[in-house]
Length: 75
Image (cartoon, rainbow, N blue to C red):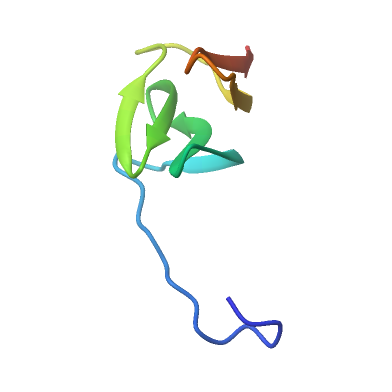
């Protein structure tokens, strides 16, 4: 994205009422932690992985270490 807001790309996250909370990039992969209507999840390069289902939960933070271990913080 340019500083004036042009040249933007919008990505729709998979899952009803999805919202991303944090973004991290590791070795060219883009990770987004967040939630959807039925629980918490993360997206890797746009593909959703559920962390919980049918739960009041949310992933607020996400990080990937040098060994590709994923860490999610939330409730």
